[in-house]
Length: 444
Image (cartoon, rainbow, N blue to C red; front, side, top):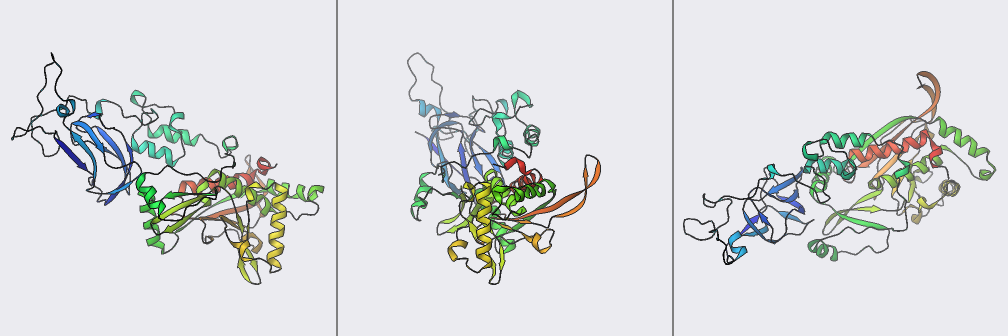
């Protein structure tokens, strides 16, 4: 039986390795030259890999999700005639393609020139994803980056194909106020992503997290390349900062009402309370801001926390401390206000313990108390994001075409670009801003 092995090629980007994202064929499938056999993710893009051979798929040598080096065997093929075996009586057996030596060969790179494929080329038939949506790999990647579910997009392309404009239009229709689609924190504290055998072997070499509070995401492909570039340019966690000026008048009105409420008679209330509530809500909708980059003996991974230990940067006589409120996502507005009070008093009195500062997942720094409008804060070690709240002051603001005095502030945030990209940062800050503009959305 004539078999040929296909190795991972350099697809013209000078890559040294790539992740095999998904197989588009299975053992026993008949393929033609240029039929798509798999998707690979390089340091630059998601690429469909065409078959260099015509024949029958023999064995898939690499599991999905595994990163392999260029030149490594990934799949084998056998000639159709060999795979089919002897023809049944009455059938006219078609002779196999042969090279100059007369043996059976597969049509492909370096083979004889007489054999042809009876299958149509990919250009003649649509390429479908695993869920049946007709979309090219770059469009599927764009949909993932924009958090768009392709099955919900209305296609306008030929033969029902989803186009780039279709995905972008669908994403733009999503409002900043996406409360109906806001996920619950739930009882599950850890999500385990499916891993292949190679990944399991690597995971077995390091301590397992079994406390139900985090998940480990292997760092590879585009994320691995981005992280390397970012660290090289900044020599540490590569910081990127975004900010947004907002009308916080309704936040100030809510704070005034809470201060006058008997339920908050023994609790100090400030705009920081609304800010804290907004950050917790926004982190639930963009989990990567609540993640962390972790270097291990077997490589790097991103740990996503499904809980919020909310750090509050505090200037104390001992210096800058960042104690955190444990499991802040489970607290009501009133309980969160009490926790902020305890944290502030403890820090001011110098009673903040090391345990109070450990395990933070995301931090708020209130630079407004120092009269600052905005800043580019440094990320607390072990976290991927920090949000700064500027001073709240009255400024002229256009409301319904009229210039009026409004309470205006600026929200800024610095993020670890190895963990989260610009679209995620922007969505997170936009969510925080939307709550400060309309805090009634989160009042419980």
